[in-house]
Length: 494
Ligand SMILES: Cc1cc2nc3c(=O)[nH]c(=O)nc-3n(C[C@H](O)[C@H](O)[C@H](O)COP(=O)(O)OP(=O)(O)OC[C@H]3O[C@@H](n4cnc5c(N)ncnc54)[C@H](O)[C@@H]3O)c2cc1C
Image 1 (tube, rainbow, N blue to C red):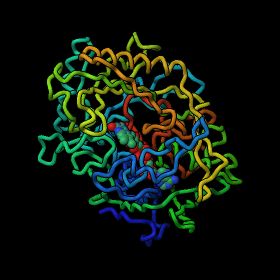
Image 2: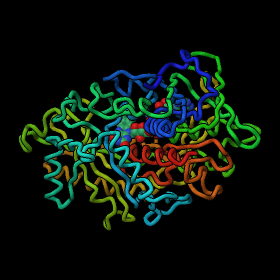
Image 3: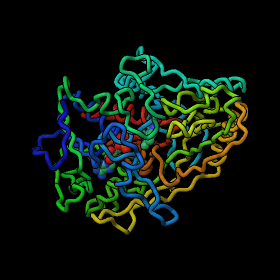
Image 4: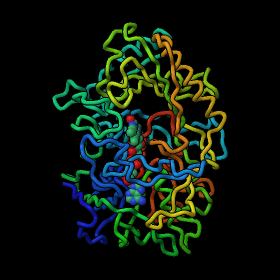
């Protein structure tokens, strides 16, 4: 069994670890597991603590720092979630694979940055399959698909009547027919699943080293502030602090793998300025933090008369946040620049809010531009850690693409009989839970920060293996791909 404890309660000899991983989310956990499968002893350092079943995302995250946004206000969100297991503890379990077009989007989009990934979809496929097996994703490896919700059924019918192909979302949630399946206890958004029906790092034992040749120790309550490097660029130690303590801990490292999310990983590299890395680690080409991608997204809510659609479909909603989607406009000649994204059912947070309403979400990958970035502000928090500041603006093309998807969502809601449609303003420019692109991958150090295996150019033992290395954010929800790519990179580690 993996040792999971607060760092203050740990008495480790840190020099015995083959690798230290920063962040215990989807990426860090699969990297830890993959290295333990290879016989390594790994430590995972995690800022947040353990969350309880039923905990809600908003109240949990209220304890963690905000980012400064272009308005100058501290109203940005630089995290997915801070806890053992990361954002996946609260996620909606929408588990798409990416497509080749996500990895070679330069056929549709053009910016001042590298857009194509340095790998193909075939490189990810074995890892996708292994993760589908570990996460018990519906519709794969004999796991039952989660059935469409009553709202999902009427949405599918409306889409079909409009000639739009409806599909069932691959969910990492055990179907209710399973003896340990979903009990539909809530609207399932933004909360830690009270049973183990919904997959997470902990519910699917990703960090459990039982039966593996290596070992995993998770030390939480530990914020990694800086990486200390030698003159040859090699990482020597991590400088960490424990919240509410003024004591700094110095952890020597043989190898460090950063998986803190695309904002926090880049911020850590920028904080690690020293005489050997005057602009921060990996930042000789001024690329760390640039190309920040949050995805473009929005919601449309249709207000219906319950008598129109049958009471079940417009009653309170219990069960997964989303069950039905369409990818009709992923690549489509009607979409501006022919590259769209997804539209899917997106039920509101509390079951009763959904009465008489149907809500759709649309998302697509945003164009990566070098002026979209995070920087460290001059203002620091009470521990002396500089605040993260976002400089982020969507392109005209981004607006045109998401506008097209919003119009198609409205068509579906109107066809369902919506008397009124409200579009919820998107606040993704203040940070989203889909974080990508701040440490791009490639062969040329002038155009990328890490190589194809996640190794920081110019270093022999510093790696980045999370959404930071994704050159285009992709048009789908990213966690499955973040995990598959992290595993691919971890498998290549010697
Ligand atoms: C409410 C919600 C719903 C979502 N639904 C979906 C969905 O349905 N499908 C989907 O694909 N994605 C979804 N996501 C996004 C998903 O959670 C992320 O894609 C995923 O968590 C990314 O994993 P990660 O390991 O890269 O980063 P994270 O999960 O953010 O993990 C990073 C970890 O690093 C820790 N950390 C950061 N900085 C430091 C530091 N300096 N020192 C130590 N530790 C540090 C953080 O505390 C965190 O635990 C959702 C997210 C939220 C919040």
